[in-house]
Image (cartoon, rainbow, N blue to C red; front, side):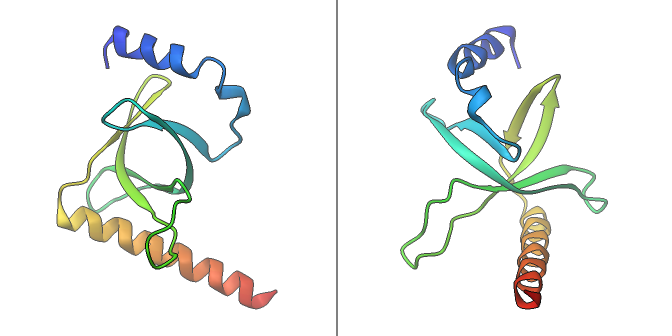
Length: 112
């Protein structure tokens, strides 16, 4: 990440970082538009040797399901970069992790 990109990010986020709680982050789409996202899980995969994050913006699809996204995460100092997952094997890693999380949440709700 270039110093120019870091400066742009800092400028866009200067007044917003304080309003974020743990598990929240602001990301930018290809058009530079910002969105608030919520981490669902973040983990390292021994299988691929990469660090991943699953997250949502709490938007729903046409069936009412909350949309979830997955990315490869890299860090440049304090700056997090989300990279697209292009490999089907890596998508399976994310899907499996989300399925495990969903089952754990369901079990916790059933216990209450």
